[in-house]
Every structure is written in C-alpha cells, then in structure tokens.
Length: 398
Image 1: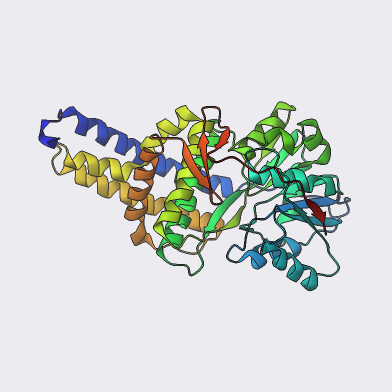
Image 2 (image 1 turned 90 degrees about the vertical axis):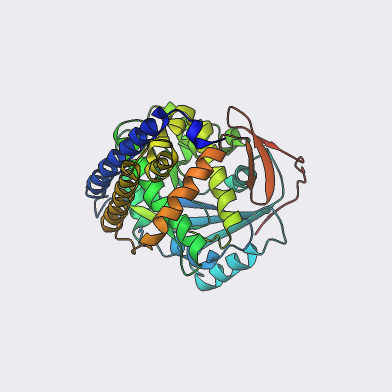
C-alpha cells in the first residue's frame, strides 16, 4: 500500500496518542517517586515472628541460579524458615544446586521434592502441588527461581502480610542484566521502564489488580481456603489468579514499597521475543481492555509512524523527540527511586520499537512457548498443550 493514499487524519490520531503517551510517562515518573517514598509497615522488635515456608519451583540450570536461591537463604529473620525446592525430573541439574545450598547452609531447613506427577497444563503449578505437602509453617511465600532479594526481604514481606485486611503480599521487581549483553539489557529496560511504572500507575488509579510470581505471600490457612494450588493447574496467569482468589476471601493484596531483582538471562533476540510475547499475551488475557488501551504508552513508535503518514510534517519528529525525552526522564526517576544502576539510555529507542512490535504481534494468535513447551491460550486464559502432557507419577522427597 502507498502511504500517500492513507487519509491525512491518521497522522493526527497517531500524534495525539503519542502526546497522551508523553503525559502518561511524566505522570508515571511522579507516581514512582511517591510510591518509593511510602513508609513500609514494620513488625515490633519484640513481636513474635511466625514460621515461614518459602516455595521454590525449579526447572533446569538457569544462569545465577545458586546466587539467586542463596539470597533467600541469607535472611535476617528471627522466626523459623523452611525452604522447599521442587523439580519434576530426577535428572534435573537444579538438584545439584540444591545440594550445594545444603552444604553451604547446613543449619537451614532446606527440603527437596522430586516428583514427575503432572496435574494440569501449567507445569509450574503442578510442581507446586507436588511440593505443597511439605509446607511446615503458618506463612507461605512463593517466589520464582530467577529472583534475588536483600536480607530484609522476608521481614518486610511478613510485616506487610501482618497488616489488617491484607490477605496476600506481592512484590514489584527490577531487571538485573548482569554482563550478558544487549538482549539482557533490553529485557531489564522493559521491566524497569515499562512494567514497573505501568503497575504503579495502574494500582494508584485502581485500574489494575496485580499479583506477581516474583513474590506471593499468604498464610497456609488462606492457601487452603482458596483450594490450594490445584485450583490453578490450568491457568497461564496462575499468579494473577491466586491474587484474585485471595481478594475473593475479603482481603487485599499488598505491594510493599520495594523491588526485588529479576535475572534477565536472554542472550539472543529470539528468546527475548518469546518471553515478552508470553508476558504480553498473559496480560492481554487477564485485562484485554486495559491491554488494548496501553497502546498509548508506546509514544515514540507512534510518533515515528505518524511521521511516515502524508501531511505529517516536521511536527511528528518533534513529538518523537519529546516522547524519547520523557522515556529517559522516567528511566532516571525509577533508577533514583529504587537505587538501581544506570541503564544504557541509547537502547531506549530500540527497546521502544521492539516493545511496540511485540505488543502488536500479541493480538495475532494465542500461541506461547513456556519452558520449552508450546501452548495455545484460550479466551479465559487456560493453557492448552499443543502435544499433550505425560502423567507419570513417580515422587521422591529428599
């Protein structure tokens, strides 16, 4: 199609959307500062600390797995702590990492469950179902294997959970690219400059009800009341579904004013693309209207598209420059608010274009790839395996 044949008003619409995106970025920058400055609840120094079971579902030897898991073993928490690791294959290399942790922390209660039983299409939730029989304490904290935390993490999460009316706690997270190259830096930018401000703005105006796999803390009683992990065995957005179930019990899901680290391990663009496509399609299924409306957050690509339209003039490029400036400002405010290392700001235009293309493609089909397995996602967010799942039922507790 010849772009000159398109109606001239299309450029105006795109520019208005881009300008709305600039306002969005500036508003998000202000709200990020306000969120980070909130006072966090704290437990009294002499208050008893409830026992905590941390659940860590594992699958394969991820980069920095030992360091990420060990951060949960180095908690300044006065109560008893149990960590339950789970794998679904006796040959999973993550088992060796758990053994290293046991050697490094002999005084800690570190349990390992090896169980190949598959209870639904969500393999992570099947792993959690297999692990849940080993829960020994009153508070349960579920956290993904690629997260790293500071020593005060557990104290702050339990303090938030102890507040009146709180049924669960979840945590924002920031990207940790390490020295893995440009793709990892792009992944970190997506988390820090898109995910974090979107969540803060959405929760501020009650437009979003998030719950993240980075952290889901609840009492063991609450977990039992919502049907245990088995109730979420076929959900793509299992973390979101758990949050909704906790809210249905009459409480809120609190988000403390902190972020924890998320290891960005993609070293190839193809892997980064698949991960982000799965995230986007998950969000699209959870909140289709809100997801469609988030198109305005892609201000820089929208302004560039407008510049290609007939009659756009130089004003479109000026809006593109403004959009990029707002993105850099937002990035700087997030870094300052949460004490993050500076990003490679020259990657922001590439990051924004890649995000916009992925956002657009997410509407094309419901196919996702997760941990090497292919699925279709139907309208209610249920995962349908493309090639079926085995039902082997061999279990070992170590």
